[in-house]
Length: 184
Image 1: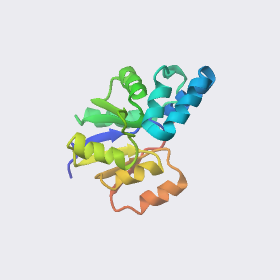
Image 2: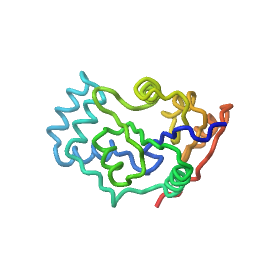
Image 3: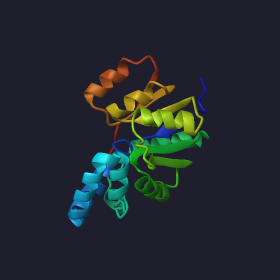
Image 4: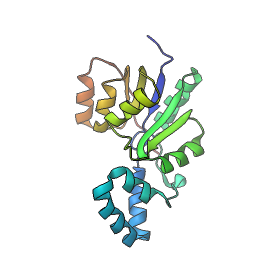
């Protein structure tokens, strides 16, 4: 077994309890409601990546107000201590993902939604395989949106998963590791 495989780590719900896109949406709703209405109308034509970019543009991630999964960060440190490459990959917009990456300085690189490409589900696999040219990898996530990714990885690493998701994960023949969430 190759324990030097690259590890991709999800952000929202995995490393942090919150969803950064939702926080940015709420911020935009409170501060720029008219702009948000315009963004939502254009979103119908241009799609989620457009909306995520627009609501993220002026949003500063409130790092000190986020709820972090200490167990997830401990696992990442352990993996990095074994000289494995760890990437952050998220459905949140690249603008927000970059803020998290810059704050923690523990990831080799970070990837989020941008340029008309919504970085969720099977799009993550497509990006990892085609853009990064990485075929063998492990993935650390927490939601049903991660199921298409886990189909292509070598090891399922999960945290903060619902009972229903755990049942689906347990049906897989892949190696599995549950990292018990510890949000604080």
